[in-house]
Length: 122
Image 1 (spheres, rainbow, N blue to C red):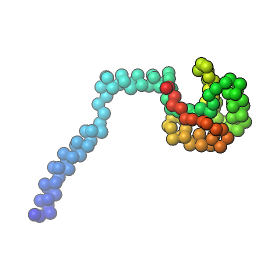
Image 2: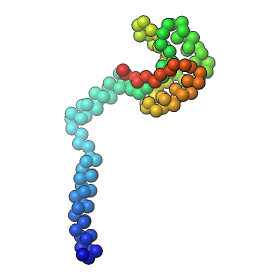
Image 3: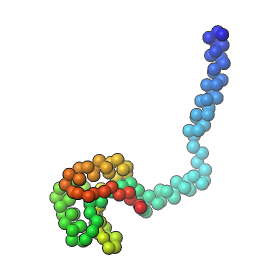
Image 4: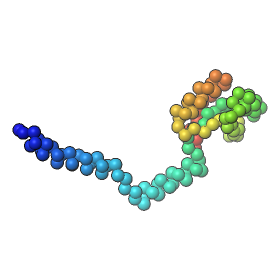
């Protein structure tokens, strides 16, 4: 076979293949899809999404001591005290991805024991 003939025969296959690929990448935004996306955005605003790092879970006096100690070591990091009966929780940071929360927890683990990464909204 001649080289030109091969190119002519393969060209239609290339066109068909590229059409399939491009058609799969285009998103058809139906009303149902838009509605689901809007519900997810609303849920994320109300409940929250992402991750936080929990430093402590237990008695109120110990929780307040953990807050004082943490502020002394990491004054720039946002910290919050939560009450979920019967325990108090000390949580720090707000991270969009777990990898970022895991990285931050490594620096906190140098000073605090038994910390965990907690998904928000759960």
